[in-house]
Image (cartoon, rainbow, N blue to C red; front, side, top):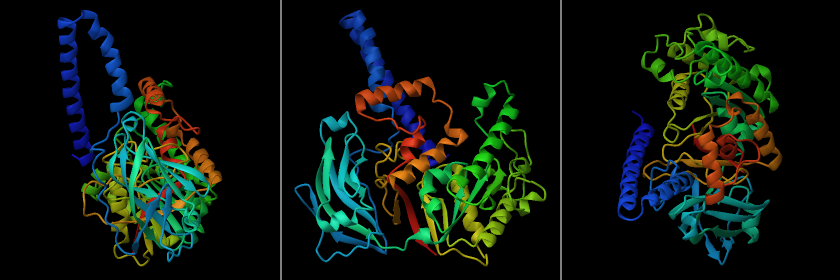
Length: 469
């Protein structure tokens, strides 16, 4: 069982205990006070749960984030002069650096009911970076793109429903602009590349987008059209295979450099466990990947037999890397992102690179999912992306962040809107929950679409973790 599953199980167990206690209290009130009091309080309790306690937050908002920043990260002492962030006069910045501000934040009473955040006012207007309700500890704000205002002494930091107690240090990561390199984005599923790296690959000197699976499972939306489960799964897989080839074209990636490998969703762990054994689709009644590879413009080793095996996946990746010769590989983070297909995707790439004649210069890791906080990145569409929670020490990674213009953000939103998996409406209960959270917790819907990924992914920044090889 993964850590994410363990956390979810513990969260649900605690919630059941809490609901049982609340029910006992309501019954006692009904018996000892007024019988109708329980009937009045029960819906109010449900509303409070949906508005304030429905998030999957598997750590205390009072925990410090425990980041360690390796070389080449520099720590620069800074201070707050009222609301203005002051840096040493000796600090020199070109504007291409990734800038992360360590702050200590304490929530106000209102910040326990309304989502708090820290507003950064500088280049391009105000940027409100969201935090956890009840926050009280060290957090890391993303100041990438704010170098001119910082050097000019005009960068302002102000808490909303919280107070910035201290701004002690600025982490400066000086690195070359990787958009000037050949970039290959590894996407476990169609839309992962767009969620994590549309801004990067749309501006890269040369880009490849390689999608590992067809994402054919969970096709209930298509079953509503009258299709049998297996046929619905095949239709969904074909649509998402099309998305993985067609949508990067919106960003200018040549068709020949958009590749769908057609392996089956959530089956990569089983393939990895038995590398030479074919692992069929869970729902599509398929054991041949070639149905989902028909749109590829090039031939790959796995096309010969279509067998969904780990060895075929490695052979496909090796052939693609040797043909594209990417200088930058972009793939899921090996510890932050808990999705099993994402973990296997990065493991497959690293195994494929072992002993290969061509090696990339740098690897960028992304996280489209988290163990500890399902809402991260917190805040609204268009806001910056603060660093995610890290409540366990010992993981030293260098952040790498890009600033996205408003035009690029809108193009990214349109790319996500073309993805079939993000188009169906959310269930009624989820829509009702979001309405209550908008009224009571101050959460704003994304102007780009109903799916939660429009809020999470269409941001002022894209955030990665960089390692040079």
